[in-house]
Amino acid sequence: MISRASLTGAISAGIISADQADKLVSYLSIQAENIQIQQTAKNLQDPEEVRFTRGFHDVFISLGILILFVGYVTGLGGPLTQGGLPTAAVAGTAAIIIWVLAEWFTRIKKLALPSILLVGLFGASIALVGFGLFTPDVLSSDSEAIQVILSSVFALVGASLFYWRFKVPITLTVIVAGIMALMLGVLTQVTDTKIFDYLSQVSLVCGLFAFACAMYFDTKDPRRETLNTDKAFWLHLLAAPLIVHSILSGVYFEQQAEAYAFVSIPVVLAFGAVALVIDRRAMLVAALSYLGFAFAYLLESADFSETQLTAVSLVLLGSFVLLLGSGWNAARRIVMRPLAGTTLTTYLPPIRNQKVRK
Image (tube, helix red, strand yellow):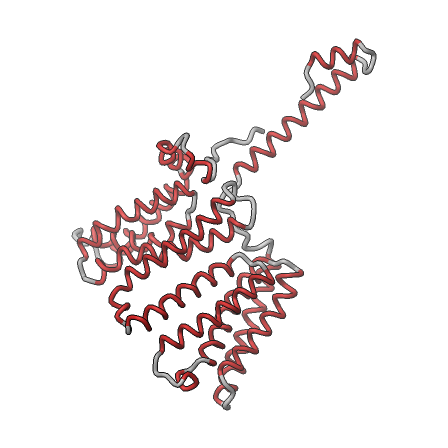
Protein backbone atom coordinates (compact mmCIF):
# COMPACT_ATOMS: atom_id res chain seq x y z
CA MET A 1 0.00 0.00 0.00
CA ILE A 2 1.40 3.38 -1.06
CA SER A 3 1.61 5.86 1.82
CA ARG A 4 -0.39 9.09 1.79
CA ALA A 5 2.84 11.10 2.05
CA SER A 6 4.15 9.50 -1.16
CA LEU A 7 0.92 10.31 -2.97
CA THR A 8 1.00 13.91 -1.73
CA GLY A 9 4.55 14.22 -3.00
CA ALA A 10 3.54 12.81 -6.40
CA ILE A 11 0.70 15.34 -6.61
CA SER A 12 3.04 18.21 -5.70
CA ALA A 13 5.52 17.04 -8.36
CA GLY A 14 2.75 17.02 -10.96
CA ILE A 15 3.08 13.27 -11.63
CA ILE A 16 -0.58 12.58 -10.87
CA SER A 17 -3.60 14.71 -10.10
CA ALA A 18 -5.45 14.75 -6.78
CA ASP A 19 -8.41 12.99 -8.42
CA GLN A 20 -6.12 10.23 -9.73
CA ALA A 21 -4.57 9.88 -6.29
CA ASP A 22 -8.00 9.37 -4.70
CA LYS A 23 -8.92 6.74 -7.31
CA LEU A 24 -5.59 4.99 -6.78
CA VAL A 25 -6.11 4.85 -3.00
CA SER A 26 -9.62 3.44 -3.48
CA TYR A 27 -8.34 0.82 -5.94
CA LEU A 28 -5.45 -0.27 -3.73
CA SER A 29 -7.74 -0.52 -0.70
CA ILE A 30 -10.11 -2.85 -2.57
CA GLN A 31 -7.19 -4.97 -3.82
CA ALA A 32 -5.71 -5.25 -0.31
CA GLU A 33 -9.08 -6.33 1.09
CA ASN A 34 -9.53 -8.97 -1.64
CA ILE A 35 -6.06 -10.38 -0.96
CA GLN A 36 -6.82 -10.56 2.76
CA ILE A 37 -10.12 -12.36 2.11
CA GLN A 38 -8.39 -14.86 -0.18
CA GLN A 39 -5.68 -15.48 2.40
CA THR A 40 -8.25 -15.91 5.14
CA ALA A 41 -10.28 -18.33 3.03
CA LYS A 42 -7.09 -20.29 2.39
CA ASN A 43 -6.42 -20.43 6.13
CA LEU A 44 -9.93 -21.79 6.69
CA GLN A 45 -9.44 -24.71 4.30
CA ASP A 46 -9.42 -28.11 5.92
CA PRO A 47 -5.75 -28.78 6.71
CA GLU A 48 -6.43 -32.51 6.34
CA GLU A 49 -7.93 -32.15 2.88
CA VAL A 50 -7.05 -35.21 0.79
CA ARG A 51 -7.35 -35.38 -2.97
CA PHE A 52 -9.87 -38.19 -3.54
CA THR A 53 -11.87 -36.96 -6.48
CA ARG A 54 -12.40 -33.90 -8.67
CA GLY A 55 -15.92 -34.90 -9.64
CA PHE A 56 -18.23 -37.76 -10.56
CA HIS A 57 -16.06 -38.45 -13.59
CA ASP A 58 -13.46 -39.93 -11.23
CA VAL A 59 -16.12 -42.08 -9.58
CA PHE A 60 -17.41 -43.25 -12.96
CA ILE A 61 -13.94 -44.25 -14.17
CA SER A 62 -13.24 -46.02 -10.86
CA LEU A 63 -16.47 -47.97 -11.24
CA GLY A 64 -15.36 -49.04 -14.71
CA ILE A 65 -11.98 -50.22 -13.37
CA LEU A 66 -13.68 -52.25 -10.63
CA ILE A 67 -16.09 -53.88 -13.08
CA LEU A 68 -13.20 -54.70 -15.41
CA PHE A 69 -11.16 -56.47 -12.75
CA VAL A 70 -14.12 -58.22 -11.15
CA GLY A 71 -14.80 -59.60 -14.60
CA TYR A 72 -11.14 -60.53 -15.04
CA VAL A 73 -10.93 -62.37 -11.72
CA THR A 74 -14.26 -64.20 -11.94
CA GLY A 75 -14.29 -64.79 -15.68
CA LEU A 76 -10.64 -65.48 -16.40
CA GLY A 77 -8.66 -65.87 -13.18
CA GLY A 78 -10.41 -69.02 -11.96
CA PRO A 79 -10.63 -70.88 -15.28
CA LEU A 80 -7.05 -70.00 -16.24
CA THR A 81 -5.52 -71.23 -12.98
CA GLN A 82 -7.71 -74.34 -13.01
CA GLY A 83 -6.58 -74.97 -16.55
CA GLY A 84 -3.00 -75.21 -15.37
CA LEU A 85 -1.80 -71.65 -15.91
CA PRO A 86 0.26 -70.54 -12.89
CA THR A 87 -1.26 -67.99 -10.52
CA ALA A 88 1.80 -65.80 -11.07
CA ALA A 89 1.05 -65.57 -14.79
CA VAL A 90 -2.60 -64.58 -14.23
CA ALA A 91 -1.68 -62.02 -11.56
CA GLY A 92 1.23 -60.75 -13.68
CA THR A 93 -1.12 -60.16 -16.62
CA ALA A 94 -3.41 -58.21 -14.30
CA ALA A 95 -0.43 -56.13 -13.09
CA ILE A 96 0.48 -55.30 -16.70
CA ILE A 97 -3.10 -54.23 -17.44
CA ILE A 98 -3.08 -52.04 -14.33
CA TRP A 99 0.20 -50.43 -15.36
CA VAL A 100 -1.21 -49.60 -18.81
CA LEU A 101 -4.35 -48.10 -17.25
CA ALA A 102 -2.20 -46.07 -14.87
CA GLU A 103 -0.22 -44.65 -17.80
CA TRP A 104 -3.46 -43.11 -19.05
CA PHE A 105 -5.59 -42.36 -15.98
CA THR A 106 -2.76 -41.48 -13.57
CA ARG A 107 0.16 -40.14 -15.57
CA ILE A 108 -1.78 -38.34 -18.33
CA LYS A 109 -5.29 -37.67 -16.99
CA LYS A 110 -4.15 -37.32 -13.33
CA LEU A 111 -7.38 -38.71 -11.87
CA ALA A 112 -7.13 -39.11 -8.09
CA LEU A 113 -9.67 -41.80 -7.15
CA PRO A 114 -8.88 -44.13 -10.08
CA SER A 115 -5.17 -43.76 -9.23
CA ILE A 116 -5.79 -44.79 -5.62
CA LEU A 117 -7.79 -47.79 -6.82
CA LEU A 118 -5.10 -48.79 -9.32
CA VAL A 119 -2.44 -48.66 -6.60
CA GLY A 120 -4.45 -51.08 -4.45
CA LEU A 121 -5.06 -53.44 -7.37
CA PHE A 122 -1.43 -53.31 -8.45
CA GLY A 123 -0.22 -54.03 -4.91
CA ALA A 124 -2.52 -57.07 -4.64
CA SER A 125 -1.54 -58.33 -8.09
CA ILE A 126 2.21 -57.98 -7.60
CA ALA A 127 1.96 -59.68 -4.19
CA LEU A 128 0.16 -62.63 -5.83
CA VAL A 129 2.89 -62.77 -8.46
CA GLY A 130 5.48 -63.04 -5.69
CA PHE A 131 3.60 -65.77 -3.83
CA GLY A 132 3.07 -67.64 -7.09
CA LEU A 133 6.75 -67.48 -8.04
CA PHE A 134 8.22 -68.26 -4.64
CA THR A 135 6.28 -71.35 -3.59
CA PRO A 136 7.81 -73.89 -1.16
CA ASP A 137 8.21 -76.33 -4.08
CA VAL A 138 10.24 -73.81 -6.04
CA LEU A 139 12.30 -72.87 -3.00
CA SER A 140 12.84 -76.52 -2.00
CA SER A 141 11.90 -75.50 1.51
CA ASP A 142 8.93 -75.94 3.80
CA SER A 143 9.47 -72.55 5.40
CA GLU A 144 6.61 -70.16 4.71
CA ALA A 145 8.74 -67.40 6.21
CA ILE A 146 11.18 -67.66 3.28
CA GLN A 147 8.24 -67.34 0.91
CA VAL A 148 7.01 -64.24 2.75
CA ILE A 149 10.50 -62.68 2.70
CA LEU A 150 11.10 -63.22 -1.02
CA SER A 151 7.54 -62.25 -1.94
CA SER A 152 7.83 -59.07 0.13
CA VAL A 153 11.08 -58.12 -1.60
CA PHE A 154 9.44 -58.75 -4.97
CA ALA A 155 6.38 -56.70 -4.05
CA LEU A 156 8.55 -53.89 -2.66
CA VAL A 157 10.48 -53.63 -5.90
CA GLY A 158 7.24 -53.56 -7.89
CA ALA A 159 5.62 -50.94 -5.65
CA SER A 160 8.78 -48.81 -5.71
CA LEU A 161 8.83 -48.85 -9.51
CA PHE A 162 5.13 -47.92 -9.54
CA TYR A 163 5.78 -44.98 -7.22
CA TRP A 164 8.83 -43.88 -9.23
CA ARG A 165 6.71 -43.83 -12.38
CA PHE A 166 3.40 -42.40 -11.16
CA LYS A 167 4.11 -40.64 -7.81
CA VAL A 168 0.73 -41.61 -6.31
CA PRO A 169 0.96 -40.72 -2.57
CA ILE A 170 -0.79 -43.85 -1.29
CA THR A 171 1.90 -46.02 -2.93
CA LEU A 172 4.28 -45.04 -0.12
CA THR A 173 1.89 -46.65 2.35
CA VAL A 174 1.96 -49.85 0.29
CA ILE A 175 5.77 -49.72 0.37
CA VAL A 176 5.85 -49.22 4.14
CA ALA A 177 3.40 -52.11 4.59
CA GLY A 178 5.70 -54.23 2.42
CA ILE A 179 8.66 -53.34 4.62
CA MET A 180 6.64 -54.46 7.65
CA ALA A 181 5.81 -57.78 5.99
CA LEU A 182 9.49 -58.22 5.16
CA MET A 183 10.47 -57.51 8.77
CA LEU A 184 7.89 -60.00 10.05
CA GLY A 185 9.11 -62.67 7.64
CA VAL A 186 12.74 -62.19 8.67
CA LEU A 187 11.86 -62.27 12.39
CA THR A 188 9.74 -65.38 11.88
CA GLN A 189 12.62 -67.16 10.15
CA VAL A 190 15.25 -66.03 12.67
CA THR A 191 13.19 -66.87 15.77
CA ASP A 192 11.67 -70.07 14.35
CA THR A 193 8.12 -68.64 14.66
CA LYS A 194 8.61 -67.64 18.32
CA ILE A 195 8.04 -64.04 17.26
CA PHE A 196 4.30 -64.78 17.13
CA ASP A 197 4.32 -64.79 20.92
CA TYR A 198 5.18 -61.09 20.74
CA LEU A 199 2.88 -59.92 17.97
CA SER A 200 1.55 -56.99 20.03
CA GLN A 201 5.07 -55.64 20.49
CA VAL A 202 5.89 -56.17 16.81
CA SER A 203 2.64 -54.42 15.85
CA LEU A 204 3.53 -51.49 18.08
CA VAL A 205 6.99 -51.15 16.53
CA CYS A 206 5.50 -51.31 13.02
CA GLY A 207 2.87 -48.73 13.94
CA LEU A 208 5.48 -46.37 15.39
CA PHE A 209 7.59 -46.83 12.25
CA ALA A 210 4.64 -45.88 10.04
CA PHE A 211 3.85 -42.95 12.34
CA ALA A 212 7.45 -41.72 12.11
CA CYS A 213 7.25 -41.89 8.30
CA ALA A 214 3.97 -39.95 8.38
CA MET A 215 5.42 -37.27 10.64
CA TYR A 216 8.43 -36.95 8.34
CA PHE A 217 6.15 -35.84 5.51
CA ASP A 218 3.96 -33.74 7.83
CA THR A 219 6.94 -31.77 9.12
CA LYS A 220 8.06 -31.12 5.54
CA ASP A 221 4.72 -29.46 4.84
CA PRO A 222 3.22 -27.93 8.01
CA ARG A 223 0.79 -25.78 6.04
CA ARG A 224 -0.54 -28.79 4.12
CA GLU A 225 -0.06 -27.27 0.68
CA THR A 226 1.75 -30.05 -1.22
CA LEU A 227 1.35 -33.77 -1.92
CA ASN A 228 3.37 -34.47 1.22
CA THR A 229 0.15 -34.03 3.20
CA ASP A 230 -1.51 -36.81 1.16
CA LYS A 231 1.46 -39.10 1.78
CA ALA A 232 1.26 -38.41 5.51
CA PHE A 233 -2.51 -38.95 5.60
CA TRP A 234 -2.33 -42.49 4.22
CA LEU A 235 0.60 -43.37 6.47
CA HIS A 236 -1.33 -42.13 9.52
CA LEU A 237 -4.24 -44.39 8.50
CA LEU A 238 -1.81 -47.32 8.48
CA ALA A 239 -0.07 -46.37 11.74
CA ALA A 240 -3.09 -45.65 13.94
CA PRO A 241 -4.76 -49.10 13.95
CA LEU A 242 -1.42 -50.84 14.49
CA ILE A 243 -0.58 -48.69 17.52
CA VAL A 244 -4.04 -48.76 19.09
CA HIS A 245 -4.54 -52.48 18.52
CA SER A 246 -1.13 -53.36 19.92
CA ILE A 247 -1.89 -51.43 23.12
CA LEU A 248 -5.43 -52.67 23.70
CA SER A 249 -5.51 -56.13 22.12
CA GLY A 250 -3.67 -57.81 25.02
CA VAL A 251 -6.25 -56.68 27.54
CA TYR A 252 -9.14 -57.45 25.19
CA PHE A 253 -8.12 -60.98 24.20
CA GLU A 254 -7.36 -61.95 27.78
CA GLN A 255 -11.06 -61.46 28.51
CA GLN A 256 -10.31 -58.72 31.01
CA ALA A 257 -13.37 -56.81 29.91
CA GLU A 258 -13.54 -54.43 32.85
CA ALA A 259 -9.86 -53.50 32.56
CA TYR A 260 -10.28 -53.21 28.80
CA ALA A 261 -13.13 -50.73 29.18
CA PHE A 262 -11.29 -48.53 31.64
CA VAL A 263 -7.96 -48.69 29.79
CA SER A 264 -9.38 -47.98 26.34
CA ILE A 265 -10.96 -44.65 27.32
CA PRO A 266 -7.71 -42.95 28.48
CA VAL A 267 -5.88 -44.52 25.51
CA VAL A 268 -8.42 -43.01 23.12
CA LEU A 269 -8.19 -39.65 24.92
CA ALA A 270 -4.39 -39.77 24.62
CA PHE A 271 -4.76 -40.53 20.93
CA GLY A 272 -7.15 -37.59 20.68
CA ALA A 273 -4.57 -35.28 22.26
CA VAL A 274 -1.90 -36.45 19.80
CA ALA A 275 -4.35 -36.07 16.92
CA LEU A 276 -5.11 -32.50 18.00
CA VAL A 277 -1.43 -31.58 18.31
CA ILE A 278 -0.52 -32.88 14.85
CA ASP A 279 -3.94 -31.86 13.43
CA ARG A 280 -4.75 -35.32 12.08
CA ARG A 281 -8.30 -36.63 12.57
CA ALA A 282 -7.20 -39.82 10.83
CA MET A 283 -5.34 -40.77 14.00
CA LEU A 284 -8.66 -41.09 15.85
CA VAL A 285 -10.50 -43.26 13.34
CA ALA A 286 -8.84 -46.50 14.45
CA ALA A 287 -9.52 -45.78 18.12
CA LEU A 288 -13.25 -45.16 17.72
CA SER A 289 -14.22 -48.85 17.51
CA TYR A 290 -12.41 -49.55 20.80
CA LEU A 291 -14.15 -46.59 22.41
CA GLY A 292 -17.50 -47.96 21.20
CA PHE A 293 -16.82 -51.35 22.83
CA ALA A 294 -15.82 -49.56 26.05
CA PHE A 295 -19.10 -47.62 26.08
CA ALA A 296 -21.02 -50.86 25.51
CA TYR A 297 -19.33 -52.62 28.43
CA LEU A 298 -19.81 -49.73 30.83
CA LEU A 299 -23.52 -49.63 29.93
CA GLU A 300 -24.02 -53.38 30.40
CA SER A 301 -24.92 -52.89 34.04
CA ALA A 302 -27.92 -50.83 32.97
CA ASP A 303 -31.19 -52.56 32.19
CA PHE A 304 -30.85 -52.43 28.41
CA SER A 305 -31.67 -55.03 25.80
CA GLU A 306 -28.95 -55.95 23.33
CA THR A 307 -30.49 -53.71 20.67
CA GLN A 308 -30.83 -50.79 23.09
CA LEU A 309 -27.27 -51.29 24.30
CA THR A 310 -25.94 -51.13 20.74
CA ALA A 311 -28.05 -48.08 19.96
CA VAL A 312 -27.02 -46.14 23.07
CA SER A 313 -23.34 -46.99 22.51
CA LEU A 314 -23.51 -45.79 18.92
CA VAL A 315 -25.32 -42.60 19.94
CA LEU A 316 -22.65 -41.82 22.55
CA LEU A 317 -19.86 -42.59 20.09
CA GLY A 318 -21.47 -40.48 17.35
CA SER A 319 -22.00 -37.61 19.78
CA PHE A 320 -18.34 -37.76 20.80
CA VAL A 321 -17.25 -37.61 17.14
CA LEU A 322 -19.62 -34.72 16.33
CA LEU A 323 -18.63 -32.69 19.38
CA LEU A 324 -14.92 -33.15 18.79
CA GLY A 325 -15.26 -32.51 15.07
CA SER A 326 -17.31 -29.34 15.57
CA GLY A 327 -15.00 -27.92 18.22
CA TRP A 328 -11.76 -29.18 16.70
CA ASN A 329 -10.03 -25.79 16.47
CA ALA A 330 -11.13 -24.75 19.97
CA ALA A 331 -9.89 -28.05 21.43
CA ARG A 332 -6.65 -27.73 19.49
CA ARG A 333 -6.00 -24.26 20.91
CA ILE A 334 -6.32 -25.68 24.43
CA VAL A 335 -4.01 -28.64 23.75
CA MET A 336 -1.46 -26.46 21.94
CA ARG A 337 -1.31 -23.82 24.66
CA PRO A 338 1.52 -25.51 26.65
CA LEU A 339 3.55 -25.77 23.42
CA ALA A 340 3.27 -22.06 22.56
CA GLY A 341 6.61 -20.47 21.78
CA THR A 342 8.48 -23.78 21.52
CA THR A 343 10.46 -24.96 18.51
CA LEU A 344 8.01 -27.85 18.08
CA THR A 345 5.28 -25.52 16.85
CA THR A 346 7.34 -24.64 13.77
CA TYR A 347 6.86 -28.23 12.58
CA LEU A 348 3.12 -28.31 13.32
CA PRO A 349 0.20 -26.87 11.32
CA PRO A 350 -0.98 -23.43 12.47
CA ILE A 351 -4.29 -23.13 14.31
CA ARG A 352 -6.94 -22.03 11.83
CA ASN A 353 -9.50 -19.92 13.63
CA GLN A 354 -10.06 -16.86 11.47
CA LYS A 355 -13.41 -15.83 10.09
CA VAL A 356 -14.00 -14.68 6.55
CA ARG A 357 -15.24 -11.12 6.35
CA LYS A 358 -18.12 -10.48 3.99
